[in-house]
Length: 231
Image (cartoon, rainbow, N blue to C red; front, side, top):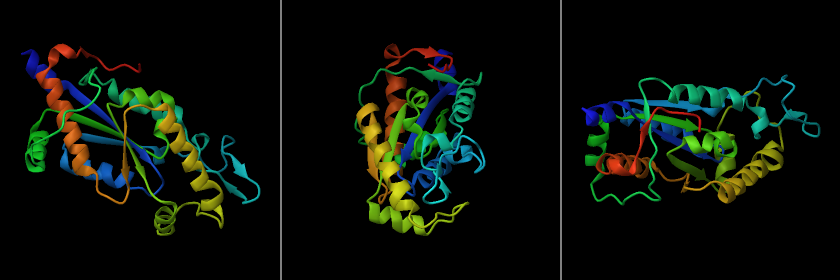
């Protein structure tokens, strides 16, 4: 009976962050298509309006800075994530594994197990989610996508933004802000897996989810089952 309850209530939270146009949303959507009980909370939904007084304005470009945390309502995002985790139907497993076991199973087997597992997935994705410290401890698995400046700029030219980038915005704002955020994550956030945004990391993330899921199932004495909290 306890085992059945454990499987029905298990929730794993995944954080996906990284450079603009690095494939964060695409990867999250691929995972959602594979794993039936996946919910995505995207940082892009929390941008402030251009006339919001909290927005930082760049006089020399006559443009708002949308590549810093203050351009987003992060308190609202944190509340939404926390409220989702605290649903009565979910339990969090406070695992104590320093690293995940390597997987010898082929990806087809991994997909089949995860598709039928009584497992809920929450994906938090956005360019600076790990720079907002209250979100970090909520993530069981953390990923950060990188690109070269040249590749990032090439991809950004293909995107349509509202408001659109002004001339010089990428070189003066978007790229320098990314480098600062990346350095902060590297030096202050543990347990982050870094991937190039030029490769598809979906299978590697699936294997990590599988490894964590199976480790928790096989070693319940190392885990504690409790209702989700903000801490």
